Image 1 (spheres, protein in one colour):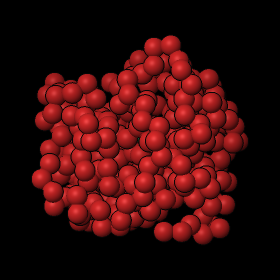
Image 2 (cartoon, protein in one colour):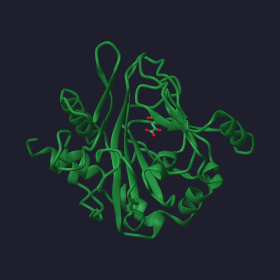
Image 3 (cartoon, helix red, strand yellow):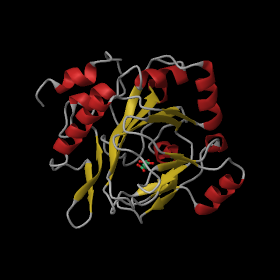
Image 4 (cartoon, rainbow, N blue to C red):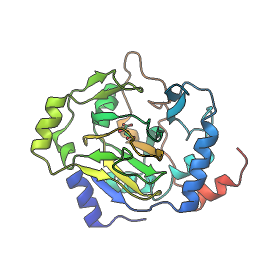
Length: 270
Ligand SMILES: O=C(O)CCC(=O)C(=O)O
């Protein structure tokens, strides 16, 4: 899948490109089935919340040597529609996955992700340059009431903003200070709500400000995130690096796989 010049311009201008229904219903069903299967795994790379310990976030489904491995998720992250688009945006075929995750917001109970830049934490991981991008794929219908993502278009151009450690959320993150978010909002177009049908995707710059609210709806909101970095931008050594399921140590370039690879991977028993 080749991006048009207009799509590339839009990505660089807004820090964001929406790709409606990039994945088919069948592919989404396979990916969801995989996540349901993995929810019962007991592993450090699955975060849980609430009295019933429902999974909130799950990492590292793309590497064959871990407890959360899923061949269909690995195939999804290596499509011309995902990896190939990131390669085009960087004019670089040598990309690796910094991390791969699923964020789950259960109906009524799924909680907030405060405004942040992904590069806020990735820079602290030792990555020097903001040459990273994320492909998000909706595995449910994303709605405003259901806690969809909001993006502040153009905010990536402001560069890295020093984050603070946000301990208020279940999965602790590095968030952007409120005064900086408000300042950026005053000079940006209105935030964009990333709503859409299952299978819709969006690719976004690692410095764009984004966040999402509580899921007040009666439906779950599951989303997959494939975070790509250039191999030439791999992190430097840092003191106490985060575990490899969130700061990968596999810096080998990823290969593209065939269009039908998600369906083919589903045919092989896990
Ligand atoms: O899934 C969401 O709503 C937000 C997730 C996010 O921004 C992140 O994981 O960095």
